[in-house]
Amino acid sequence: MKLYIDGDAFPNLLKDIILRAINKNSIETIVIANKKINIGKSSNIKYLIVDLGADEADNEIINILEENDLVITADIPLADRVIDKNAHAIDHRGQAYTKENIKQYLAYRNLMQDIRDSGEQTKGPAAFGIKDAQNFANSLNAFLQKINK
Image 1 (cartoon, helix red, strand yellow):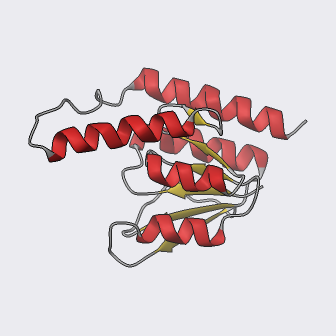
Image 2 (cartoon, rainbow, N blue to C red):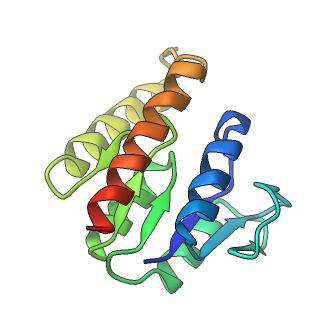
Image 3 (spheres, helix red, strand yellow):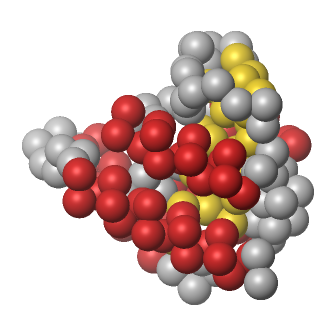
């Protein structure tokens, strides 16, 4: 299994968590973004900078992703594409996207986008905090334990 990190908007609170997991489990990791993102130094991490553009990082992840790989992303449309390739996706708050729940998340995201596009003011997500980082750590840990069995 390889780990792909959608580096766009990757929370700083998660960098130490993900770096420890990568090193502890010797996970080959590729951080993909359209600007320099530094998770930390590790022989297991490669950094890939793609061209500027709305979906350049997402498209690169999908192009090189293989079945059963893991993608860390807050981008629900990307998570949907990941699930379609029989791979795994976890968001920054620890939500594991699955075949059973991804379409519901995507439909809600699209509905909210339509509401915003109509001019309605909506609230964004709550500020990312320590509890979110703990949820992410727990979800990542559970995933890694499951695949290492």
